[in-house]
Image (cartoon, rainbow, N blue to C red; front, top):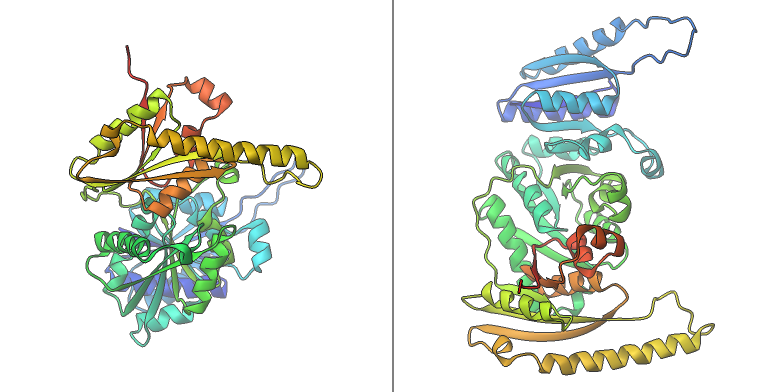
Length: 439
């Protein structure tokens, strides 16, 4: 096991190397110091000038010798190639606990447009990556002269659990104050006291499962459009010394379809950031319980199957929330230009909502009344049923979403799309899909 630190010999990289060596000493680990030089590009039949790498190798040796002065065991490694690829290769080849990097002193606009080596590694590494942007605050904490204020982003159970678990080795190094922040799409002020307590207790339970009985402050805040900006506002307000984020490491089209909260925070944050892959360290033996279950209703035969299975998942009591979503007009329709279409659609939606309420009352009594299960109902209007169901599950603090499916083929679902497919793509909790029973 080792700590990996990449350097380009800049002041930011040297500060990160100092912190990497201090962590290596405290954890009794060796430090691997890597410098990556760019490969030469050969154009056609032009003469090739062989680059002399000796000055860079000497720089690397001097930097390694400087760090050894603090008492850490340093292995220096010189590589040629693309920096992100080479550093990830070293981390994969050698058992690595943590990658420590200094962030280039670029403006936020430059980082957003072009990215950086540090951000590229954080988004692709299989181990946690610590990006140092404020070395002073971190060094003071390591020396025992300051408290490290840590802000954990709680955007999904899987990623936040991995992020919080990664903090465990840091707790023994100094005084740490932890705050978990969840930025919700619905207004946090609209939550009832009981709903707020349920959400806060779920977050505390994730912290206890990852870190044990440690004091933690839970903060619920609201932003419908830009959760990363609201989170960064909390970072500034709390004078945070370390942001801890879980990342799903989305790539390609997936990144375009599902914008990354962690990447946005990593790009714009002005303080130290610890990025943790959502799959990192997933060896917990904790068995989650199902106590609150949301059922999506569309009043088809498979809807009854979903409701039956939902009761089977709550054999010892709990809460069941039944939700039907009515399609509403697209928000882009201009009621002035297309008033007849807009208002006709609005009246149709109102009639559909009334009919859905009546159909809910007609559901079999055996599926609605149970001495152990509390059943609540809700009819929503939304232009995107999948998004509405996921938002309702967040408000209800559901453990599982239960849905019915007609059993379309994979090709049909891919071409036509479905609410089930949309929920599976968006949901951060398990989704139970009941299909039509065989005759």
